[in-house]
Image (cartoon, rainbow, N blue to C red):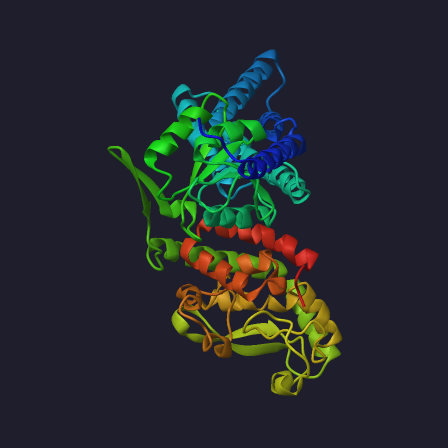
Length: 502
């Protein structure tokens, strides 16, 4: 029999004790009722209430428009229509997986599934109303469907806002056990734990060949075991899912066996792909025999989608300009009356494919401010190649208000109308900035710059230069029309909060 020396047993026993203490600490910290079930019930109740209210509103509107006398037959007819709409819409939402935990407040997919469910609802109901010639059914649907869609999207937005607040406070997160090499686990922890997100890494399992041993920590996250114990550790710490990063030690057989271990305890299995800044619509999984191929579409910067974007930009800019024309006239008069100089300030900016154009703004500085740049003392408050000063002496008193709430940007609607800018896009850079761009930064010039974008809703001038570039490049390569609508909606909140604006 081989005897293990005491000098070897002592470190092992200490590591075992540390590991047991870490397991107890993780279990106690995260033991609570699953938030996913609570949030799903909240969504179901909200959606059901919206659909019922929509059906009642449509029935009342139909009665007013058709001026029908209230009889038992009419009431029964409206009741049947309302029940059909409520039942069909609720089932359609469920079939479209609108209550899937994986899309809770994680991006536009949640809204898209609501729209998909509503679209699939309209077609059969409209066809049914046409075939059976149900009196008043078409009027009922014309009122109920658009109203219901807007109300459902509004309910989702309110629920998402509530969930985001909970996550910023550290709650309502999906607990993750990370499996992979220590450097892969470290990267995952940085991505998920260092910012408010829907996931939090609470433990790690690394291959036995790795330098990190059980009982140690990676960025404050305890290493609980190796690949053989990953399934057991996930159940021990109450993880909601296991995220596996690929390596030589993590073979297909290891992943398959891990999936078998997780299935009985209801823990999800995720495979992390080393794809930086690639959005979901560009990824397609193709099963081929025993191998799943991950296909990544190349970014496209032309074609029908961009023609549609230009049309939507022009129509949107025209409507916004008409709506805000009184405000723009009032601001123009205020600028003219409070300081000497022109109302509008023109500055050459770099647009799509490096073409320059004169970008318009309401003048917020004194005349000749651009020539005073070299006379300013102190460092820039901007990030990277951007020059910004929080207390710029060149800004007029009115200009401070205009810049704080981005009112000075309104004349750029005219740049959109003539095709030089988009409503949503990367930040329009200066010529001096572009001359210092690296190759990666030039990717943001493949699309038109925007009045707003991910950089504005993400924090504007408070963002680091690296984050600003990343957001712009991500948008240029992954934009969608629905994503543009979400950014426009988030822009209103960012403007009113004035976060990061100076």
